Length: 176
Ligand SMILES: [Zn+2]
Ligand SMILES: [Zn+2]
Image (cartoon, rainbow, N blue to C red; front, top):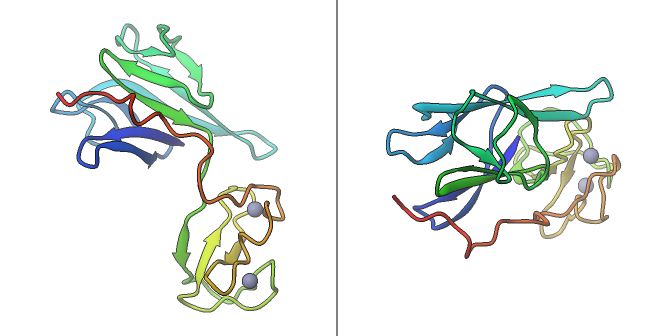
C-alpha cells in the first residue's frame, strides 16, 4: 500500500510504502504518521488479495478515533480509493493506488529480459514491474532501455517512471 506523507526534513510530500497490518496514528511528537513509530493508534491498514490477484486495501478505524477520511468520519471499515485524504486535525496524508517502478541493480539468478531476450547480468541496471502478478525484470540503462522501450509491460502495467498524481506541494501541513 502506498501513501504520500509530508516530510518536514525534506519539506515535500514523500512516497511511503507500507505493508499489511501497518498502523496509522500519531508518533511521540504528535505527528501524523504510518508505521512502527505510531504511539497513539487511530486505525490499521490491511489488504486482501482477490482470487484474480487484485489487491484490495482497506483501513479499520478505532471507534471515535477522531480522524476523518475525505472530510467524513470513517466507518469501522473503509476500502481505500486513489487520492483518499486521511486527516487528523491539521495534519493529513494521502493514499495512492499508483505504484512507481524503481531502478535497481540486478542481483538475482539466471534470467532473461522479456524485451531483448538477452540474459540479465549481476549489477545490470534493471526495473522490476510493480504489478504483483507480473514482476518481470527488464534492462533499463542509458544504452538499453528495455523497460521504457514501450508504454506498457507485457502484462499491461504502465512503464512510466513518474506517478501521474502527487499532492500539491503548496498544500502541506505545518510543522508542530
Ligand atoms: Zn533487455
Ligand atoms: Zn508487468
